[in-house]
Length: 76
Image 1 (cartoon, rainbow, N blue to C red):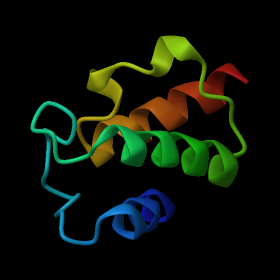
Image 2 (image 1 turned 60 degrees about the vertical axis):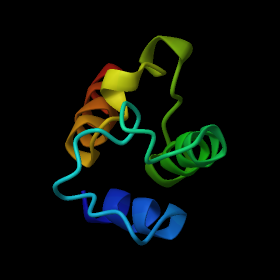
Image 3 (image 1 turned 90 degrees about the horizontal axis):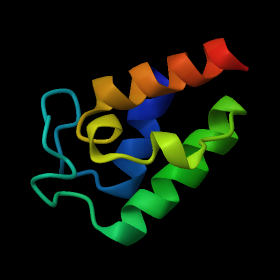
């Protein structure tokens, strides 16, 4: 989870990722940030994020992203 928080802070250090739960719905992350985020998560955790995971629920909070990473790792 710490690595994920580091990735997020590089994208926008002004957001409190430990408490934010509306990163997508609240438009805290723009489309460019999301594309960068998906690429960084995939590279860092050596996973492939298929289109079925590219839904707002998986990116609205750091906890949701971490859950997604864990689910993908379990599947691979």
